[in-house]
Length: 408
Image (cartoon, rainbow, N blue to C red):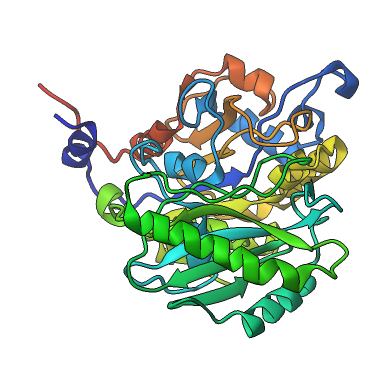
């Protein structure tokens, strides 16, 4: 029997409230230059410490499979309980939905980063120094004004936050996915987008469309000091994914600031709650919406942002700022609370990694690992052990007493 079908057969409805709180890229590695501590271990977290002392289970989670470094999409799909290998979606689709764009049948969505190119056309900064959102909006307005169509395809351009923007190609006979144009490192040229299926004529047509868009757009950015180029990632179309509420019997809501994470939540049918811009505001809105939903996904970006910058102190401070806001959430403590990351973003690596992320699970029935703090070191000793992230949601359901007994 399919395991998901078994879970569905065992599921019973309760009045429990569940909250999944994700500190993006939370996990890290300890090195001598940082006092053999991770940012989570170095941070002062009195509220997380108090929650741990009340009783919780800890462990480490493998986001996809041992040794595989996940993107944000696979990392979050696993947290939502979907096998990230079975359910794959391009970053462009996620970002587009998060920005409130409608994707029609056959649309190709692309997540773009403004970048800095050197005099030889090589990528010098993949994020253009994280230009402010206002500058991104100005540049997108320029591109939008000058490029409305490429051939017979309509081109839709929408700014996101900081250096990020979205492009949608809308026309007949297009298909995806294509490979990224982002080389993933500095000192390399912008790559050519290629069909994942070389025999697919529609993907070939889309690849030519992408190349023609570059030919039209790059000259418009030549005079810019920082954002004189752009990189494309997640060139894809919208997939069909089973709805979260049908799958789990929980009415879900999303409290996220960045468009990508709103888009991820929307893909599985979560209600996108708009408005909050800080973690304190997100927790306050959680209190206000507490009676309206059964499941809350709350996303905090800055641990990942500073991990990618390699900024240990800033990542530590971001964790401390999260901890300072945590008592707001705990005014209406959910019946089941999970605090974790979607992956690790170690400061020494300055990017996502394969290292299992730490997870804390708190409920009346979670047990008490009798650990003093929530850290990678403590999580290594916890009763949850090391498990695949796609099972976290099922463990949360179990802690909410949502499963009947299996078998006689």
